[in-house]
Image (cartoon, rainbow, N blue to C red):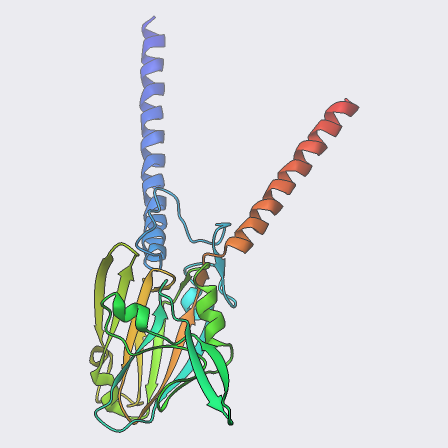
Length: 290
């Protein structure tokens, strides 16, 4: 009896040692994973709570990535760029505040011209009217739009139409983790960019970004700054304001990464569902053969 007892005790000791060694190995393995997760979450919106999963966005049917980006970890490096040139040809001190993103505010305006006798009136719609934003208490002069948006103020997109982008983001919020600003004069970097979170009921808070924080007199390119904006979204609840000094030309490049694309999400979910349907049908067919 004692022999069996000593044998059981010996087995118990070996088992404890075995699991202790493997538990230590498991803890050591979890360390790098936890570190990877922490690094990955740096690029996520603050609105996302990752729980215990290593969420990178690559398998999320509700998220699409632009360009060659495949996850939140690569959206800054491999996303696409949207460039726009803003030119203020007024004389000093006519600095104008431009809304790069007008949120949900109505920007429709009508320009009416008269020609001939009797006059023939022509009405032309545009989308740079900031009256609705000013009525809400926002200090702004014009809204970003294609072409002439005010006296001696012009905007030109480098690849796509500005209006198409601003229409797109009303239904498909997109992330902009970085903004590059090039200016014809370094004094342009003395201004402050403002980001507001808004709803029809109230403003949710402002974020002031002094451009001088990203300009170093010793830097090689003295007319260019890179502004990291890791939590910035272009959507129908975000207002982005940028003052443009008189006699200044700005080239603004938006780095675009993740997009909350409803059309793409529906397609991805339909494909996933159909794959499951086909799997179920195959299993039923196999059961029928049996």
